[in-house]
Image 1 (cartoon, rainbow, N blue to C red):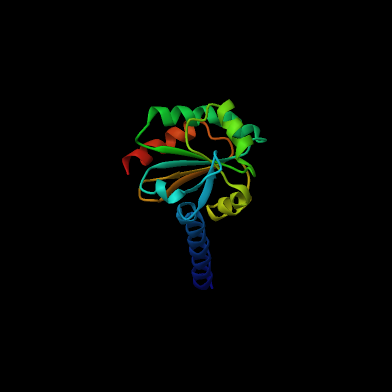
Image 2 (tube, rainbow, N blue to C red; image 1 turned 120 degrees about the horizontal axis):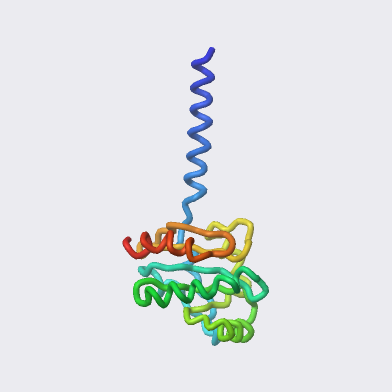
Length: 167
């Protein structure tokens, strides 16, 4: 009696862990297949960033935690300039208000306006709930090596930097 149950329990555990592993694997392909508008409302193919270590941060002007994490993103980019890139993807409809926001917050990294592509892109990149802020860490090989839902802090950035820069 115990053997059939043990086999069944093992199969259930294996299925659960297999599902978790698959669920945690996020492809960066939707990001690199996207074309978003820059702050001058000109289309930019994000494929141009393929092959570089990236910190991709989804934000919105009305999002308090999004505003709070911008200084840390600026610092990490400045500290590792030329070795990694930070991309800001604003869930915004218009470039001009996003441009004013980026200027007011001294965002010195590439910032894009997602318009109607923002939420579907976040969902395709592992954010099924569409919450903000949402940050992805992508190595130079295009592998998503980490993600963070909510305010990204210095410790979160530091935890991924070594892997981003080493790969």
